Length: 367
Length: 126
Image (tube, rainbow over all chains, first blue to last red):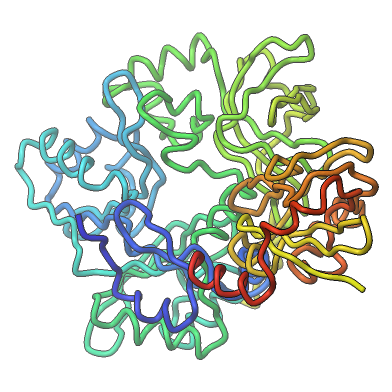
């Protein structure tokens, strides 16, 4: 199958991107700055991420759609305000996760942002669950551009007036040229920022305006170190059909109303695990020294018994040290628990720690 | 008088008498990206030509380091263990990896000179 390219591909090339294949797309892993500098620039300034490979699924419908979606997602969608967003997941009936997603309520229905590698399967599952009652568009005519970091709000406000009015996890339509962009105040880096849904033909000119205002293009490499420092899950690493939201420590994302009533796909297992506790749970891991424990590194307790496995591990540029996340037997999941990580045949000490690894000290805004 | 030679695994070796100083090339660091961890062979250990002699890790992945020739490790460079970023900034000078006592200098004949290596690197790597 031919590799797919986003509408910013030419711009990536002009900015000396190194490309990798990701979920069938040619995507920039880094630019000439390199992962560490790109990461730090995002934390201190404003980084632009092409995330157009992700799925933008529009589902159109009325109250019936809301009811039907509540049978799927563990959310209180009836009481969700128009233009508000929630982080959620699509589960199987054992509460294994097909995908994690952001769902936003629109006037005419919902917009769901899906992972690139999962989007086609998600559409199939959702079409079948919704019995093709509603118009669904997995829109490949729109690009998705994330702008992340403390300067993003003033940079984006130069281009889209009054974007400053958006609250965290809410969105709205903004006029741009002769079209409308849908902008949400959200992201996946642990920074203040926005995600902009824009037609493919305007994506490049819009991104160039961001560049002209001082933002820089940032690759998927830094996107990964940023999300890991922020303690956020990545599908295919922390999340899979073998993992439930409770095991992944994502109970916070389930609406309180639904924790009592259930009635969503996977709710039986979710409610049981809340009651009885899950056997394994996602934790933060801090290796001692500079050792990096990559995905699939085996975790032992101090008596050298296998107690878990690393799902993501790298060097955290803002933490300035190695960081990892993994799943571990519940009894060893307390903060400060000493564990051992097996890397290249040797066991190295590490500690269970709280998440996130990096927490923003927010400065109060001018407004 | 010194002489620098290069391996297909993107290591360089600077030869002074029977001592070889070994590191990884600029081209290798460009392929690896930001280096954040390095593990070096112990002083006193013996390494075999083309065998493992350490590890470098970038933000993206771990890669083995190979020794271009055999010998006994006389010294390793702790300054790059403490500050792996040096490997990106000065790979072919300050950020050498280890020095070894050369076991068999005829092994050097299989290595490339600068011109040959530059051509090899250009053809092999993106």
